[in-house]
Length: 389
Image 1 (cartoon, helix red, strand yellow):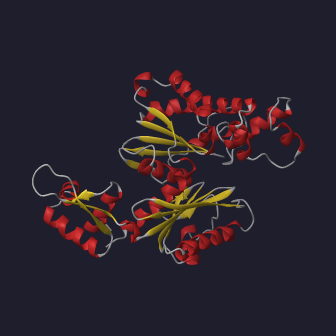
Image 2 (cartoon, one colour):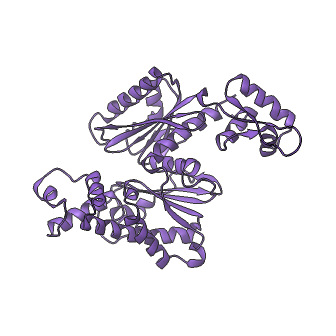
Image 3 (spheres, rainbow, N blue to C red):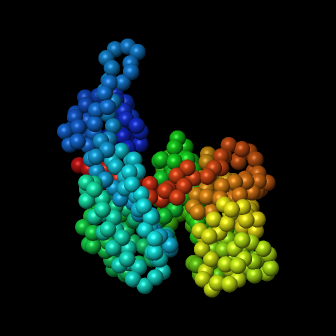
């Protein structure tokens, strides 16, 4: 509900405190109205008085901010190898985080395992004195945030995934696409702070994109905007996970990195992973490749750089279309740093229209692998604020 209280909480969730005159000015209400509702929120322990501010003349006004212990929010980022869990206070500070290994979205019994992980995370938080006010689950694939349905994983006709989880956990649950969660985290708490137009490109096992336009997350008509990975980009006849051929994801992603590296090793090129690839039937993990890059393996770096060039070519088109202030590159491949970003920037310089791209900055995610859980926690907090009466 868009009540005066929720408007004040929303405003303060986006800045580090404000005075009553600042609140009144930002919301277009009188100082008397602002004073009344700030008083009510103080009585509810939703706000705290941070003391008087500096003032050159006149009385020094008090500054108010969200009270950290008002509520606690759980954010989970789920992928095909692990679940990243984060706990955030009401002020938006990430208090705790941990990774739960041994999870696979594709495995039999994955839904039950996910419920167990969620229940365990809630129990641990509550035992530590953190009563949970909301939970947000960030998951890959096509997510309808309005209905809480996942059409890629755990789909069951007739009952949305969020409702099924709420029945199990007895807590408000919201669902979010993983790349959109990363975009929220980076925009509000990371590299995108202070920007109005931003693209986030998530280069993980797959390839996704989040879009911020004029200060708002853009979702499109049905909520699925940003499917960069499933735009046709290559005449390679490789079947993508979506069932189409030649998608961007088939050449710009962790799975493409793994495939290309394995092919080159089996063709006779040398790498510190050669023995691992040639003598084991176990699939090569993305984490193993990232470790080899950190150890300056020449072949792994070369494959990363080639992906960076392709990513830059596709990004140049995005810059020409959107003219963004900032492009943030996140996901596991972004953790290779300049090995990915330098060739990407060179390709952007080569292919983008200079007049359009000259004011666009390209950087790596500031939150790193925490971007998803930070974004998920912030969404859970936002839903709690919106429901405030």
